[in-house]
Amino acid sequence: MRVGQGFDAHAFDAQRPLMLGGVAIPDHPGLVGHSDADVLSHAIADALLGAASLGDLGALFPANDRWRGASSLDILRESAQAVARAGWSVANVDATVIAQSPKLAPHRQEMILNLAAALAIDGSCVSVKATTTDDLGFIGRSEGMAALAVVLIEQPAPARG
Image (cartoon, rainbow, N blue to C red; front, side, top):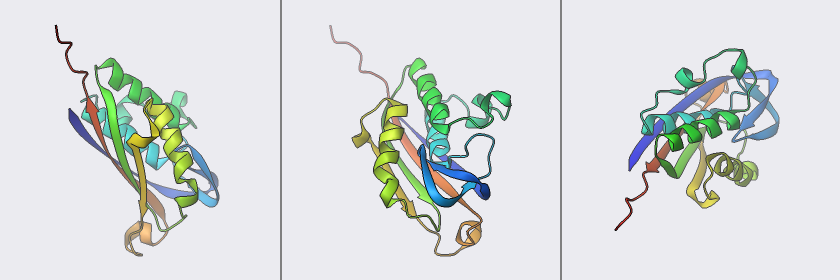
């Protein structure tokens, strides 16, 4: 078994839609980024890659034309596939979105289902939480948001003869 941790942060951009866990959140500014800037999916993908010692998100998904405007769920899916090719499977994900707003509770189940599908695991193995910074820092000033993720990956047990 291996554990990986991931982090991502982006500033707000009122000209873009907000995507979190593959869900478009209405009535809230989006995030600055080369792809759709989904901080939740990015943090999970980075944690996966770290756990499998496959580098970081920027190394596998450079800011080039191929990834411009890309769905971060596609980036997460490709990260999970790279982890699988390296001989690992995703056991579970625990992620936290850090933002003053919006409220995530109405969207949490859809996020979990989207993330689980991209990772090819059961939704019961994905946890998505939210917290604020109690008005501290760039997040508290509503300048942007961040996400943290921890993942556990495992290799299949050897066959017993």
